[in-house]
Length: 264
Image 1 (cartoon, one colour):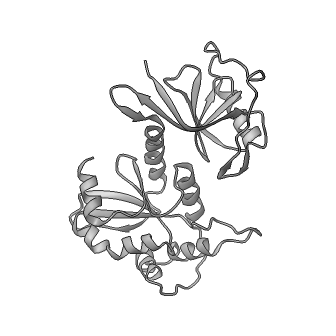
Image 2 (cartoon, one colour):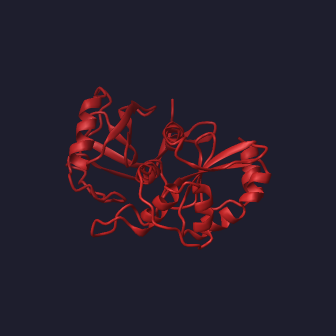
Image 3 (tube, one colour):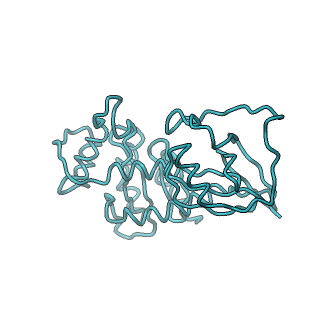
């Protein structure tokens, strides 16, 4: 029997259309105890009801719904991240769930790892690759051109590659896809120009070194990669996804990343 801990969770009802003020800002609602319905464990999981409530009340696209070890609570994977909900769809939990057994297990991170690995398959032909000659490990890194630590990491690419670490880059414009008036952001346009270049690996290296890059327009994966990043918990760059789906936020020096990869 799993024991669980809800950490920094937001509990509210799914019938409130103003739950989210934006894609990244959750608004909690205080419900008086007398008005809250008591939880019941005999409600059957109704996938269609949950999908409808997430879509109509929250404007989210649901990718997967499944039962969890917690009675009456379902895991809901959406285009805006992982959530938990009561089987009847009346309550939503936004936060991390841990199993407290012989050791503490982050069940939310485990679920996200699966989503990340599945999602990476869809971009396997759309990454910018810096391949190690004697490849031992492969990491996927969400990056942005103007990110200071992204540039520092890229400057050390020879060291990473010498340790057998291949880099596959995904685009994550920190400024978002569009600005406040609906035009494409400069960050998006810069990354699009890189990905649309005939030699995008060279173009990315030049862009990260501060060299100018000619504006290019093509069918690019930038927006899809950005949305995927938001879905799997990316909130900044660099963000490193390991071969087991674990995500490491922030810069990792070559030696430290190699040590980490050896433990997988």
